[in-house]
Length: 133
Ligand SMILES: [Zn+2]
Image 1 (cartoon, rainbow, N blue to C red):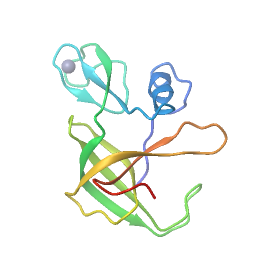
Image 2 (cartoon, protein in one colour):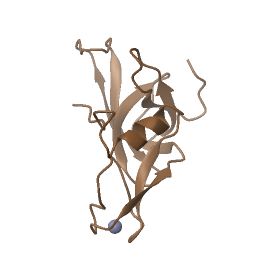
Image 3 (cartoon, rainbow, N blue to C red):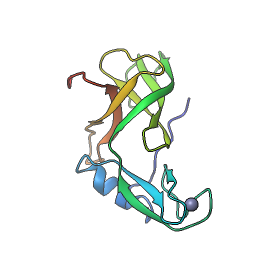
Image 4 (cartoon, protein in one colour):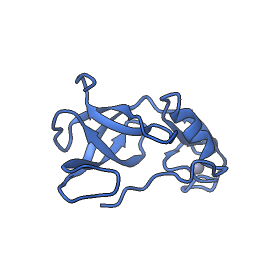
């Protein structure tokens, strides 16, 4: 499973996303024509090609699928869990699950992993109701 993230941080489309991430706000896009939410950021709505606006996700969702990774990966110490989380707003995002083990179908909430070298924090998810590690 490869992790897809909006990069680079200075890209015109993703700059807004990462600026908000530094404030621990998860932005997704909503089509102003059809109302559909999407992630990751694109210049227009994938469903109807309408214009999109940024909205803040409530940061709640459900684990759509996940896998435990046991191999060495740049920047990550195994084992760790890669997942696709379906946000309550609709979009599915590839992310990491942190904290207590979380089952497929379980409710999760947004959290943030701080990173080195002034990189913006990375959105991660943990079991709903669990405390910060
Ligand atoms: Zn649309």
